[in-house]
Image (cartoon, rainbow, N blue to C red; front, side, top):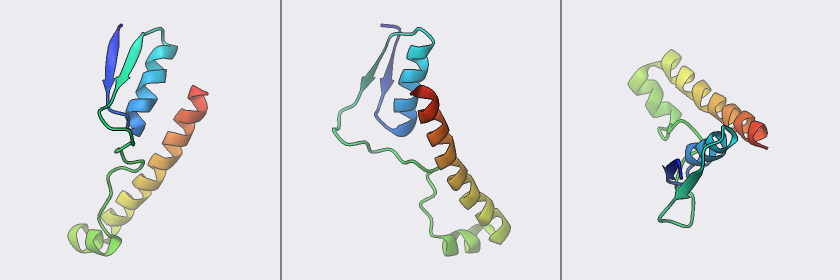
Length: 81
């Protein structure tokens, strides 16, 4: 075994096949049955709260980054298959 991935979130489950495609032998270790990770960039804040806290332009940038992260996950999953 070359390495272990701790967790079964999106990044963990993307890292394992990525490493395997590069020739590494990896195991995914998780104590829970259900994925506890987030598909977004951890943007849990309501948009109104983000605007008050960070101002409109930066809040919009954060939201756009969260949308871009969904595209990134899709591209990674397409690449893995």
